[in-house]
Length: 150
Image 1 (cartoon, rainbow, N blue to C red):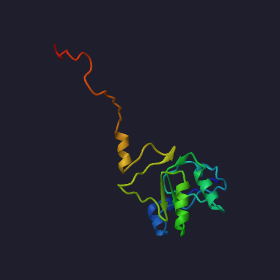
Image 2: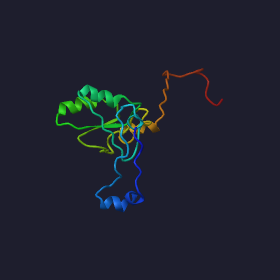
Image 3: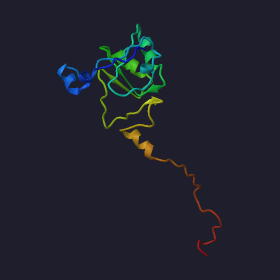
Image 4: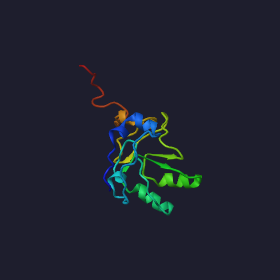
């Protein structure tokens, strides 16, 4: 992995970046290995990793080769491919030709080491419910002639 590029103070200011037509700093690291931490770790922020693949199965294998599984995005014109890949990905959310569209009515949660439980939707209520099994044999118990409290 290459060392991050150092930006001058002038390049780091939001105003300077806006004037240059950029919202974020230029890319600052490159790696040619899927084992790189930027690929393997769950990194939050304005980060994009790009990996090359030849076959659909290769893309799925690269995406699933991580301890994390929060979300993924599939970009294709082929709806059958989109659904097939979405089913094969080991992630909690898959966006097709889009990114990070979250709705209150749908669950949002990760697989593997990504998150605990779900947010939104009916499944989110499970985090607040404790289930208890109570088995009761119908009829009276104990001495049927004894009146309680006497």
